[in-house]
Image (tube, rainbow, N blue to C red; front, side, top):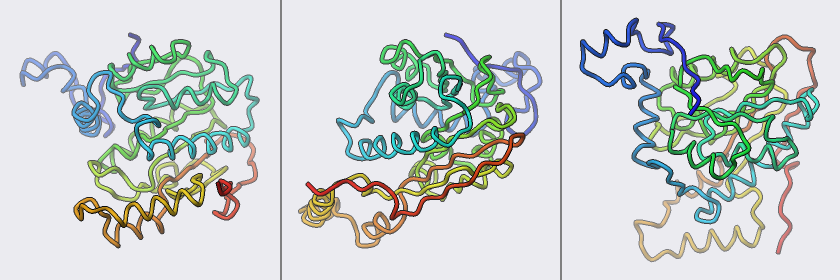
Length: 294
C-alpha cells in the first residue's frame, strides 16, 4: 500500500527523534511508536479498540445517528462545492481521515470522477475495506504528521469527522496546519464535524474557525440533531426516549435539552490565502431545508 511519509522533525507536530533506528535501539520501542506524536498515537489506539481491522459498525443501516450525519453531510458538501471558484471537472480533492471511504464516495455521488479524489487515513484495516467498497478511488496510508502531498496538487482538502477524535488542542492545530500547508494559493478547506468532540476526546467545543485563522470563510453552518428528520418522526423519537422503562437508558432533562438546544454538527468551507475574495455566505437555521411532514 502506498504511503505518505516523511522524516521526523521537531516542529511540535512530529516526534523529536532525529534517528529512528537510534531511538529504537535505545528504548526498545517499535519504530511506529517512535514515529507517532502523541495525538496520532492516541487516535490509533482509540480506534484499534473501537473499530479494529476492517470493522464497519458505523453505517446508516445500523445507526440512526449515522443516517442523520450522512444526510447532513451530503447537503453540506453540495453547498460547499457550489461555492468554490473551481470548475467541478478540474477540481482535485484530498479527503483526510477517510476511514472506510464513505465520505470519499460522496464526492463521486455529487458528480466528480474517481480519478479526481484521493483519500488518506491512519488505519490500514479501514483503508483495506475502503478499497473493496470503492476500488476506483485512490487510497493512501498516512502517518499523521508528514506533509499532505498526494502528488496531484489538490485544490480542496476535506476533513470529515476527523478533529472530534483528537483529544489535544495542539494535535488538532497540528493537523489544521498540515492541511493549510498542503493547499495551493486559493485552495479550499471543507470541514465537517461534530459541534463537540467525541466522549473519548474530551467533549470540548471544536471551534473550527480558530483552527484555520488564515483562511477566509466562504460558507459556515451549524446543524441540529433533528435537522433532515420529518416532524412526526421527531415527535416519535422524543416520546420513545421519555417512555423508556430502564431509567439508566432514559436521557436526563439536561442531556435532552442540550441535544435540542446545542448544534450537533458544524460545517466550514474556507479559502486559503492567495485568491480574489468571494462573498461570504452564512445561512440561518430557518433557511435550511426541512423535511416535509409525513
